[in-house]
Every structure is written in structure tokens, then in C-alpha cells.
Image (cartoon, rainbow over all chains, first blue to last red; front, side, top):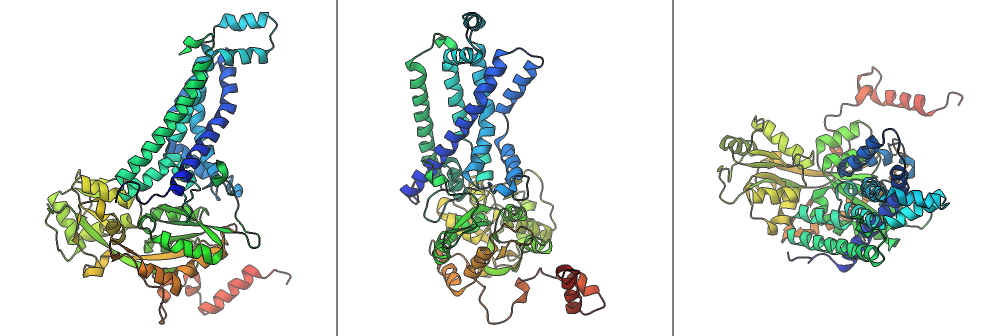
Length: 232
Length: 310
């Protein structure tokens, strides 16, 4: 068989769309949850802070297959959230990818937040800024590192196979549109069939996507560098 | 961009809307392309969408045990029977069969080519210490392989025996790359043949080989008494479609590389009761009671289903 011979355009477009949709939603969710966490942890000094940061960075290395299995157990019809019938849906995949992307996002943005000088926060406070003002200022100053955190989280999500295969079920409808098949899980199917070239071609598409997302992020990051542009 | 991903959720249909059926099946029915021939016809006929989850037989049965599939199409009679005995499946039907083949490198380092016994061939591979790649994933093929080792009286272990935990296609590719022997279903082997240099060393019963290499497939809807939310009617429709003259003909006409991959066996004018109940089923508790089996059964129905105050 020749490369991409039996993959039609509908299929390619829809697995790409599912990949983008699931990863983007997961990173957006992670950002909504993670940025407040990294601000809260980054700003304050509290007892056990080093333990908390260690736990968060340990999460970066959490095996995705284990996350997949736990989400499977929870969402299964015989599990605690079974009545919602979420297993084998894109939403289940978003959930597992959020769990995977969150620690990456928090860890990297935490170090960015912590690199914002204390005196800057003090000055803002002295000038009468509310805690929201200070948070916004810090996000602005740490923007470079935060965008890096978003990109790292995106990379983790979109290139991940283990958990989405388990909780998504790798489903394609008979009209070649994907329901829960992503570029990565499509690659596993090709590998399973021995179509190595096709798998690599799909990998190239995935790489191009990641490159595109990174270029976009880098552009945003570098266009208006904060004063703290040296951040990383 | 997310339109592909919407319209998911609960699929219990209203009138006229498309129903969804979750099918948990083995990699061999999916990777050979057979389901791509069957499912569109079923979907058209029943206004349904089939969500196919292709796993090993062990994983497919586990998915159904958790209530996460409506119907399974698998190939490991022992595991299917256990699934039925435990009450998770109902109305099993035979669908089709093919066979397993022992494949290996063309130069056949262990010298098993043409052997008439699969067990002897396995024993010879073990004696020679020739590399053997095992699925090691609790799939139907893996279960069959372990059965053959048992028949050979060999406990496979050592560096020559590699469990890789992958699907059939992956396993064939890996065996090919490492010059190893493996057991494959004929369908996946034929469908993957273009990509690998392995050759059949011991034929299955379709071509005069030993019967132990038989490979029958069964369809089993999930018991709606265990999981009321499964789409039982559609699961039965699917089982009905696979075993109908139309479904059987599609299976019969399906070829890869010019060879028929699966042989339908659901249609028969003679009773084949064996497909409905576990092999060696003895009638359960009722069989041992002093009353006749049907009387005892009826009494248990009354006790179970008729209210006290009827």
C-alpha cells in the first residue's frame, strides 16, 4: 500500500479537527483552573508550599495511561459518574487531557509568576492596587513564561495517545468522520495494521500542527514583550 | 470546528432520530476492513450509527461487563461462555469463522514448516529457542496461543518468548522485524501480508491444518437486565443483521488480497443449539432439583416476578 492511499480527505480533516478541538478545550480548561492556582501559590508563602510545588511538578510526569484508566473507571456505566454516559465521547477525552495538561501548565506558569520581582508587587500595593490589579500586573509581567506554559500544556495534550485511546475509544463513523479518533490514535491504528508510512505521514501532519500552534504562541509572546521579557 | 464532536451524549432515540450502537469488538474484525463493509449497510437499514471500539477480545468483553458497550463481536468461546454464565450477555449467535495460522520467517530457523500439529510446532520452536512473539494482551488470539502451549506441554519462558501486549497487526510487524514466529488469525495475516515477509509455517484447519487452530466468532448483546441503559433493541438488531442472509452474504463476499477472510456460519436449517448456551451448560441450579427442570424454572419465575399481593 502506498502512503495515505486509503485515507480520504474527510477522514484526515475530521481526525485533525477532533485533535484540535479536544486539545484546545483541554488547555483552555487547564488555563482557567491553573492560572489562578499558580498565582495563588506563587504569591503566598505558606506552610508546606514546597510540598505543594513538588506535588504539582510530579504531576507533569504522571503516566497518561494511568490517567486514562482512572477516568475510565469513573466515567464507566458501572462507575460513579456512569449515569452521564460520558465514556467514549470527546468530553471524556477533554477531561483526561485536562488532568494531564494542568500540572504542566501550573508548574511552568508558577515559575514565571515567581520570577516577577517582589518589589514590583510591593510597589503596586503601595500605589493602592487591589489584589486583582496586582494579579493582572503579575500576569502581564510574566506573560512570556505563561505563554510558554500554555504551549507546553498544548504539546502535552495534542501529542498524547494513551489516555485518549482508552477513554475516547478511537471511534470513527462509517462515513469516515471521526467521533473520538485523533491524529495520535489514528497513528496507532496504522501502526497496528503495519502501514508504517501512513502512520509517519499522519505524524508529519501532527508535527505541522504543533509547529503552527507554537509559531502562533511565539508571535503573541514576542510581539509585545513585558518589561520582564528576560523571564525565560 | 467542534461540530464533529457534538451531538454525542445519551443516544436513546426519540422517534425517527438516529440511534447509536456501541460495538466492542476485536482488532481482527476492524483491521481487516470487514466492519467497514458490514456497518454502513446496517446503519442504512436501521437508521443507526455504529460506534466501533476495537480492542482485544479480553478488553472488549471487559468493556461490555462494565456496561459500556451494547453488543460485542468477539472470538474466544471460553471467555464468551464465562461472560454468558455471569449473566452479562444474552442471545449469543455464531456469526462466522476462519482459522489461525502459525507464521514465521521464510527461512524457518526452527524447522516447523508443514508440521501437522500446532502443539508439536510450538514445542519445536521452544526446543530450538527460536524467537516467538506473543500478543500477551488477553485477546482471543492470545488465549488460543496459550491453549496451544498448554497442549504442547510447554511453559513458555525465556528470552526467546516475548510478550508484547499489542494488537495483531503490530505483533505481525514486530515478529517480522525480529525474525520471530507468532500465531495470527488468517484474516489479519492476509490483510497485513503486503507489509511483512512472514510466511505461513503451519496451516489452520481451513487448509487441512489441525482443528485446534479453529477461530469461530460470536455476537452477544449485553444483558439489559444488568444495564438498563444499553441499547438492547438495536444490539439485537445488529446480531440479527450479522446473522441474516444479507449480513452473511456480505461476510462471504468480503476479500482481501483476493482471499475470502471470513466464512459465515449463522445460517443453518438444522438446529445448532450449542451457540445459544455455554459449552457444557448443565441447566444450572434447576438441573439438580427433584422437580423437572421446566417446573423448577417456572416456580422461580413466579417467585421472582409475581408480586406477593397478586
